[in-house]
Image (cartoon, rainbow, N blue to C red):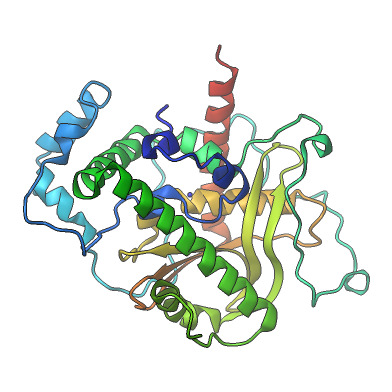
Length: 347
């Protein structure tokens, strides 16, 4: 929601964006964007530009798989997903050799003391800025996005690299940089518009100067926004007091009567199932755990919601994560966090 570092792969100096705005646009969210406007006159084998040495074993597996038509050309056509409404997802089947976190900190905080409603103002959403280095006992803390990027599974990193090479062949180096910068900018404007609407509790009304992309995203998310009420947090920093990581939460509010950490995403391609969102479920679980262990927040959360809004205005997919599913992804997040710490400790 990269020991190849994806932002270095993209060639963009987004250090500030990664550390401060992990909610904006996680690279895996758009790593297989279809870009239907791009020319397809010449079929190009993107595997030729992928680091053959680094991904030799994986490349051999992908290109020789007997499970269906898995040739490079057909894989390039994977961008075409069918439309479909997905509200609830099932917990993935448990793998027989699945690992267990060595330090299993619970998702919910049994020791958290909640203030009475009389001592808080429920009408004012909590909005906390990122803490400075002098406010943190151990200096700088890693962000959720940075941790996920630096522990990205090799297969996922391979497809990201393949997508990057394909886009560069179509757009050129400069065009690719401009394209990714535009995606970040669109996501930023989308989040700002959502914040204004949720604070005002009004419906979106198109303005003459609204960009076409923003109009599409807002129209796409409209049916989800109608079920979002009781906003508790907007664009706010969270720090897990025990596990020592930080994040930036888009929103905490009730969705269909369930209090959720809500993560808003933008996409140009359909993502009808939770698996299409890559590491986003882990990101949401990480934010939930941080909120539950951060005393700045007078509540705990055990559900999540990932909303994928589409540029063409088609209805957004709202992927609801119940408490069981959140616990599943919390364990996966703990494993990634442990992997990150192990890598940092190596000389």
